[in-house]
Length: 80
Image (cartoon, rainbow, N blue to C red; front, side):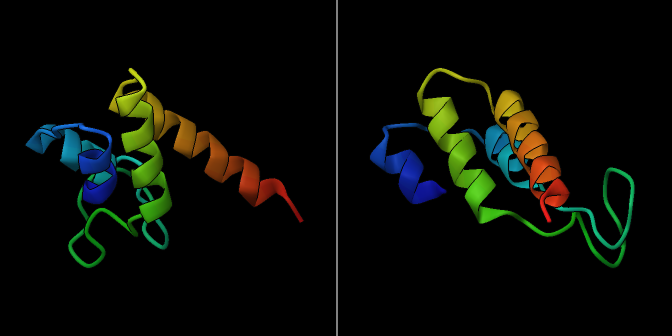
């Protein structure tokens, strides 16, 4: 994620970094949002983090990248 940001000339803030990493995190086994004592924010998706940086470098917002990543996860789950 940081290499992609550097290659694209994107300077990530701490808030953007946190949102990119925790936004699309997979929340299984615990359900819900936020922090879990045992599982933290969930499993980080490196692919979605890099996609969020690419989206950000193309003028998109980190929240839209997280939403897109969430939609992509739901579509992947539907495939047999």
